[in-house]
Image (cartoon, rainbow, N blue to C red; front, side, top):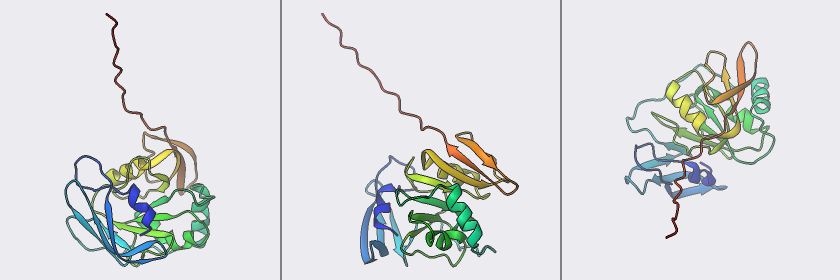
Length: 210
């Protein structure tokens, strides 16, 4: 897991939002290979093993999906997600994770892969997260996201983790979320743009003269 990603991660336990604290046991090229992430609010701890962060609270096995990497699909994904530079990071959800290493070979943008098929591991440029709920990322943290046709609530959380004007890509079987503006589609997938994020209400205090 890329060390700079820690600032964007959030504890999946419902409570006030807080950054996580990383304790690295072994690092390679600014990637945590073995270690622990801890939550200062609820004291939950999440292990990092072989570069993979395990946020799962219920345990469970990893499903071996029948998905393989595709050089043409990875190139197309890079264009649709607009990964033209190394700024920020992009999220690949579920089956899209099968394209992670092919995609990493053609773009400089760091990739965060959430619950990819069995066999996809972390590497320089590719951080892997395992979770059993919403994507554990801060709102607006990612520059782009590719969502699959798995859990609707998890896909929605991935979109929330995308910054305003960031690209969102999905297969045509997935309905365009209300907070995404569709830009184009073909017979297999659509690409959209994340709507502007809502700003919190600001309370104005008026001082009255006496």
